[in-house]
View 1: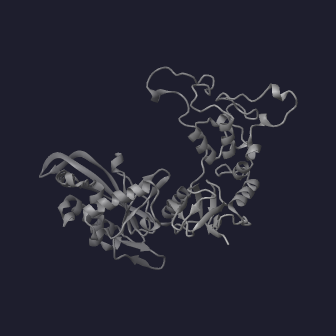
View 2 (view 1 turned 90 degrees about the vertical axis):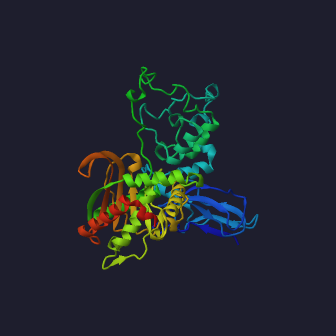
View 3 (view 1 turned 45 degrees about the vertical axis):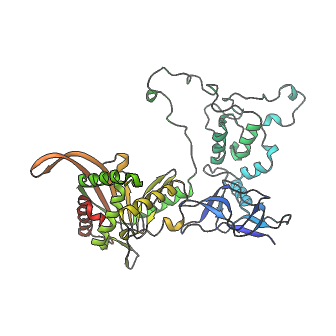
Amino acid sequence: MANIIEMPKLSDTMTVGTLLKWLKKEGDVVKSGDMLAEVETDKATMELESFFDGTLLKIFAESGSQVELGAPLCAIGKPGEKVDAPAASPKAGAADKATEEPKTQDKEEAGTPKAAKNEPEAQPAAETPAPKAAPAQPSPPVAPADSQPASRAEGERVKISPLARKLADEKGIAPAGIQGSGPGGRIVRADVLAAEKNGVAKAAAPAAGAKPGAAALPSGPSHFAKGAIQEERTVPVSNMRGAIARRLLESKTQIPHFYVEIDIDASALLALREQLNTGLEKEGVKLSVNDFILKGCAEALRRVPQVNGSWEGDKIRYFAAAHVSFAVAIEDGLITPVIRDTHLKSVFQISGEAKSLGKMAKEKKLKPDQFTGGTFCVSNLGMMGIPKFSAIINPPNAAILAVGTTVKKPVVKNDQIVIGHVMTLTLSCDHRVVDGAVGAQYLNALKTLLESPALLLV
């Protein structure tokens, strides 16, 4: 009997997963431990692992589809074994949904699986049987890039699913020249494949797709060019972006934020960092300012442990360990990898771990235990030139530190005005857990540590 692999729960808050692509195809021999597909959760992109040996007999979910937890994804069994499609397969569910909600613009329509299965039906209308006059007017082998279906008025927004748009971009095909077969004339994946087969012009074709009056602009700086700044479009909300929206809305509306801010003299920190990087360059050491800040935050939590807590309704939980997370910007939002037991690790250990986690985060390869369980968070926009900002608390943490860039400005030292390197730190606190005086004590402890950075090396 074939083994059915269902959509697993790959994160603590996951309700659905987007099946980005299959790494195996029907008929492939797979072994336990092989990676079958890439699945996007609300936190990261993860690989779906096979727990069985055998042949991939049947795939039930199309690439690009959203699949609920527990829904069947594929079947693995013996070669030639007959597999009946589950009664409520993702394909059928998606098709029903598209039929019931034809106006939905931000999801791949059910027409995608259907059209993909019956490709001949997705061909442009010019190829359907016609009266005798039709042979005299065959579809041209290469259509001009600005050719539009007869039913699409000039200037009308092109309706195209996200998956079809991605495929069209990859193949260099202009969506405006494709006839849509999905609900309401929406272009789906099968239409793009049919257009490629029939030789629709590439999007990069020179000016053929330009509208009258939008041809060559006068020479000059490109930022003075007239016209739209981007294509007007709607895009589906990814699992990750949806989770970010829900959590931050919950944070901002349910957590009573207050903010405390302090300026620090970063001159000693910058000097120590340069000395260490120069002296240990041959050993491959390259410390960042953020490495010192992460270590400093953990040591400051040791000095003011009340900040290392979480509100739990009728009680407050205080954590024994400082698990410091840091925000990493990725293509579809941000994620917060966690450096566990930060208070027990050296700046060098933190640096290596932060680089590794940051790389995995950008590749969406983090595992759930690598981005959950943080007790304090750092958000640093200093590398982007932002002097100061206020961050939204990342639940269930009770505080988050916003780090600005180092700015050269006049400061007073020994009653003399000199050029200083000033960094602004802003602490956002959950007033249910942290009072103003405690927040101020924490920032002052952090200031002491960062202005005397040698303390972070012992």
